Structures are given as C-alpha cells and as structure tokens.
Amino acid sequence: MLACSRCPNERPCRIWKVADLRIVRQVELAALRAWPALEQWDDDGWLLRFAEGYTKRANSVTPLQPCSDAMADRVAQCEALYRQRGLPPIFRLVAPLVPAELDAHLERRGYALVDPTLVLSAPLHALSLPAPSFPLHSMDDIDAWLRAHKAVSGTALQATHGRILAAIEGRLLLATVQEEGEPVACALAVVENGLVGLFDLAVAPAWRRQGLGRALMIGLLHGAHDVGAQRAYLQVVEGNGPARELYQALGMRELYRYWYRVGPFQAPNLTA
Image 1: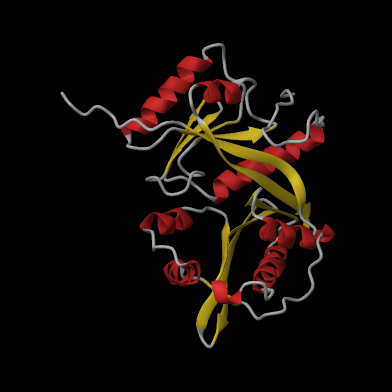
Image 2: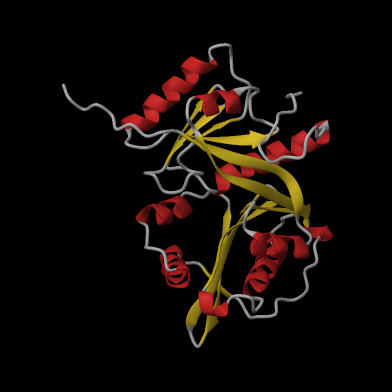
C-alpha cells in the first residue's frame, strides 16, 4: 500500500483504506484518459504529458508511483524535457499517491504551489438528480460545441482544445443550454468503464445564478447513466466557492485532492 502523504491543504492524518486507494486510482486514471494529452510517456509510473501548453493537466508530470533514491536526478530530467519544448516544468501532485518528499523537494527548488484542487465523486444512485430545469441541447459536432464554449466563456478558440476532445477514447457527451437559438451555457461529460467525468462547465455572465449549471450537470449525469455510468467525478479548484456549492448540493463529496507545483521557467539554450 502506498503511504499516506501530506497535501498542503488536506486535513491532517487522514488514514487511507485499501478500498479508498482503489477508488482514487480508478478515478485518477479515468480523469487522465478523459482529458488526454497529445503526447504521454510513462516513465516507471511518472506520467509526462504534453499538449502544446494548453492546460496544466495536459502539460505536467503526474507521479503515480514512489520514486527511487535518485529523485533529484529524475526531477532534473523532467525539467529538461519540458524546457526543451519551451514549456515550464509543472508537477501535478495527487494525494495520497504523491511520492513521499517530492513536494518538499520541489518547494526547495523554487516551485510555486498553484491551484489546489478537489476531486469530488459519488455513486450516481446517491446523487440528487431531478429532471433538468432547463432543456439541454445535445451535440455531436466537436467544432460546433467549441464555438459555443468560446461564445459562453469568452475565451479564445484553441485548436489544441479541439484536438484534445477528438483524442478522447471514452464516450463524449456534449451539451449546451440555449436561449433564442444562442448558447448561454455548456459542459461536457466523458463516460468510460462505468465512470463519468464532468468537464468544461461554462455559463455566460448574464445567465449565472439561474440554475443553468445545475441543469447541465443533471442532464449530463442522466445521459451518462443511460449509457452505463455508475459513479461520477469532477475536479474543482478549492477556491471556487460557487462551483463547490453547486456540486455538493447535487451530492458530490470530496474523494481526494491534487495541486500543482510550477517551476521557474528558463528558455532552452538553442545556440550551437
């Protein structure tokens, strides 16, 4: 069994049971597959992921196994690989799977702690899932959904975002809420091996606090149940109080946490 590790914001001395660790590992691996990198290497249980810099999740090292005594050398090798690609070295540390002492080692090297995140999860039968209060518009066209997401979130359209969604091997469920034919909220779900992950929830500013996010979550979970999902999970930044309130009201509960360590960026030396 992997040893219990300390997370920067985790309640102290949580004792992880074997069953807990099994579910954590199942959900963590499903989440990594549901948001695939464009390139991924498995270096003896350390996953090195690259996706042209789009999202930290897809451009970071996720250690899932304890490291050897040569931890410092291994970290240095990872740093070099990311800097060669013009990317900052980022480690995504998952409690309770994070190797002992790695977080402290990265802190000593000047890595900043960024975006402590909760992974919430629950069996679908334990959730409060009434009929959605707004009609959902299901979509099959990734490009059309991305345009809706851009319009709702106000973010720039990213080709890499589309490539990540196209690389998902699980069942992809895309949905929007529309008003007079225009999207005002959107989200997606990925169903694989009985698990459903919820991602990319966005609600237009003028439509927030009206229940659209809740309707999207409920509708996608109903759709996931219809295609065999039994447990739901999602990731939410710890400081996002409104989102946490929404998800917990549905019955989602904290399963585990992760956080990022972002290293100082040094451009590679390209001279001969």
